[in-house]
Each structure stands twice: as C-alpha cells, then as structure tokens.
Length: 122
Length: 106
Image (cartoon, rainbow over all chains, first blue to last red; front, side):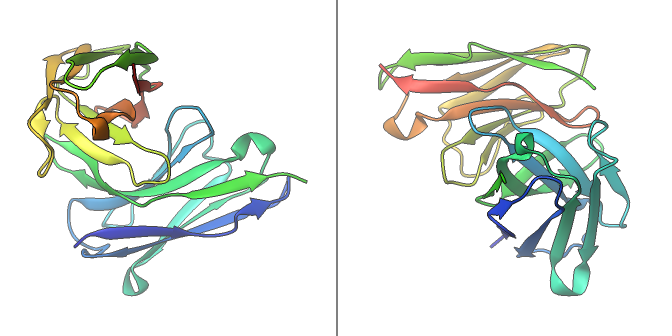
C-alpha cells in the first residue's frame, strides 16, 4: 500500500524558513520512473507545483520559486524534504507531497498525501 | 510555462446528472493531460491520466477526452460523493494545473 505523509510546522513567521518532510511507504525513493513532488494550494486557490526529485536524485523547481526552494531526499529513511526560504503570508497554503510516475508516454501524480496547512503570520 | 484554463469555475448539479468540465492548454500538449479530484482534508485523487485512461479503482462514470489543446472531463450519473473540486494538469512540460472547477449540489 502506497502512502505519503507530510509533516512540519503549522505556523511560521514572515522571513523565516519552512522545512517540510514527506515520509513515504509502499515504494522506494530509488525505484525507477518514480519520484516525489511538492505541490501547494493556497486557501480557495489553484494547485501549484513547487519542486520534484527524481529517482536518480535529479531535481527540478518551479521557475517562479526556484531561488527559494531546495528539495532533497534520504532514501534510507524514505523521506523527501522541502525547504522554502523567506516566507511571506502569501505562502500560506496546504502543502502536499505526491508520487509522480514518469514514463515516456505517461506522467502523472498517482498518490498524494493528505496535506499539511502552513500559515505564515507574525 | 504552459497555462491551463478550466471552465466553468463552478457548477451546480443534481445527483444523477451528467456534468462536463473543460480544460484548455495555451499550447499543444499531445495527450499529457490528467484530472484530479480534491476534497477538503483529504488526499487529492487521480481520476484520469494521459487524457482518457481511467486510474485503477476509479468508477467508470468518470471519463476523459480531447487532444492537443482542448480536453474534457465528463462525470455521468453524478453521485453524492462526486461533489468536490476538480483540477486538470498538464505533464507535457513543467507541471501546471487549471484553476479548478467546484461541483456543488443544486
């Protein structure tokens, strides 16, 4: 059974750094064609993809946020970590991690965590 | 980035109705289009991948169609558990999502 679970602070002050952890089970972070992305949804707004880490440790980032994001993984712990620097109230959102299946003819997020709501406020 | 435009932003429907949600890409994305269902407090759920492939375990009342730049999600015989928000997502390049369509009870 594939599961993903996000963890991290529920409240962060402006200008601080946010660190979120995604703990996965039911698959390995080294499995070919599988990777993990972080995606967020501000209250009442659309989903926004943030970052992805591939099985070979290659990383990709949202163009608009890449200067603030770092994604990494610890395969032995089955964890993917996202850090976001210099937080602002507009970063208030539910943050999801999702497994991405990436093949030549298909590419989709097939399993998601329940998400964690992060509020940025002083 | 490829922009995804969904319509309508919301709709009201009754149990048993058929609803259609549209998604348009700002450029051709072949069939790299996926659909998700999102409910508050729950993990988003993949419904349709690669335009029209039904994800395992998803009821057959959900179907997807289209190609190129214009895509449609159809929900036939709407059930109470289908009232949710639906998002399209392109995977042709850096992932981007539509703005979402909230399906509400009439």
